[in-house]
Amino acid sequence: MSALDFVHETRPARVVFGAGARRHLPRELDALGLGRALVLTTPGHAALGHEVAALLGSRGVGVHAGAVMHVPVEAARVAADTARRLGADVCVAAGGGSTIGLAKAIALESGLPSVALPTTYAGSEMTPLYGLTEGGQKKTGRDWRVMPRVVVYDPELSRDLPVTVSMASGMNAVAHAAEGLYAQDASPLHRVTAQEGIRAIARALPRLHATPNDAEARSDALYGAWLCGSVLGQVQMGLHHKICHTLGGAFNLPHAELHTVMLPHTLAYNASAAPQAMAALGQALGLADAPGLAAPRALQGLNARLSLPATLRDIGLPAQALNRAAELAASAPYPNPRPIERAALRELLQRAFEGADVA
Image (cartoon, rainbow, N blue to C red; front, side, top):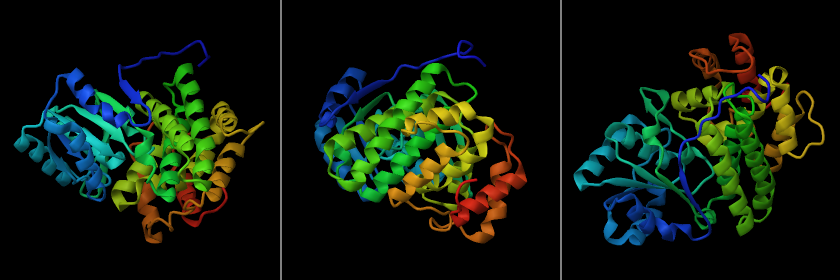
């Protein structure tokens, strides 16, 4: 496909960005004509949920601090029942990917709209993608009904995000944009957005690693996450996201850390089939020239400098699960530049399990 042979489609999305932007939530709900908001968050962020509820005043009907990683269907049913019982007409998801994922599950089941207040760099707030885990299998889908009506980005809410979580969450966002660089349905605008998102995060994370309270770096990272999430929401992901969705749901591995460990290896798998994407990734990472595996190796090096986990072993995958993981990841593959080969995939997972250099 040449640069002048493409299809580009966008969907309307309202984004409110800036320090203290959370204070605009009442205005945004009024503009939507919605006035009975159920605030969603995780158990660990219940205090944030109550802070948001206080901002909403009479518009808030309660706080449901029941969001769980990978969105188990049982947790989604409880939350949807709570929303119905309280007569909510909108959910305000205050948190990271787990909380926003819960709001999406409610929207999928009941049609209840949501407003997102992200606190991490996951980027899922900018996508129509959802995931539900049942019986050890995470099933994903795409439905524009689950896309938040408004996303309010307030960098102040990420000030207390632990450094390790900030680093992994940022690399999770990079994964969304990196796969967008070789997505079969990406347009030139998607690729430009992906590069800018990666560039912003790659510059912000080392600053945050050195100075976690750097307000400008927090803002830059959230800006990058917005761009990376926008790419994730508009193009088809490939092998990397298939592996992460599969392993995360089947083995309950931490989402952002899983993306962090796998990304250099999955990019290396695709490097020979997507040389232009690797060159664009290298440019976004500040490399003067990025032939072959230079960009995946640069990402692996960045992970090390940011003290991020380097192996699947480190984040809880048992060695005896590798064969099963390869079988699951090879089934129903996502569109990918290089064909998915079971043996090559098993080798990739072995290298990621051991933390070997990308190859």
